[in-house]
Amino acid sequence: MKERAGILAGAAAAAEGARPFAERLLYDDELQENIRTFLESARKIYEELSGDSPDRIAARLWDDDKLRRRVEEAVHAAQEGSLRLRGERVRKGGGKLRKLVFVLAVVVAFLMLNPKTGPEARQTARNIYHYVTSGE
Image 1 (cartoon, helix red, strand yellow):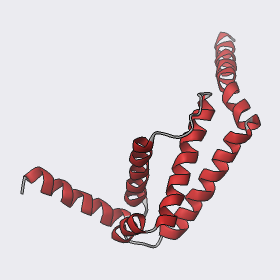
Image 2 (image 1 turned 120 degrees about the vertical axis):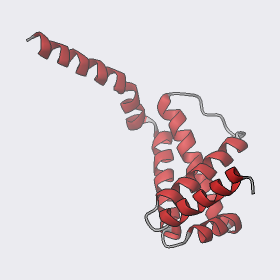
Image 3 (image 1 turned 90 degrees about the vertical axis):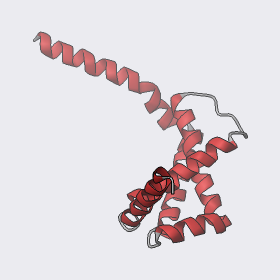
């Protein structure tokens, strides 16, 4: 019986800890818009890049302003939504370097984890790593 009471107390504590997050998800219209924007942008990006090779994806991200804006929009929505979910203040503007680093991380993750581009991207990364570490 004590064990059951401990489990119930732990569940109640977990539910109470999750309550602020659930309330923000339910009632914060701007957070909901951030989530909607992120998912829509990510879906469009995936549809545009899903059949391309890693080299082609990198070239398109470098040359295609429309695609780059879509990636930046998804990054901004994810960052702002994350802040809102944690209850932190959302600052407007600034943070260009952090956005750039985040965009690069998203692109690398996409290239490495996508089933179509992953093997080639990982092999390219290995070749670059071996070239850099060998000092040639």
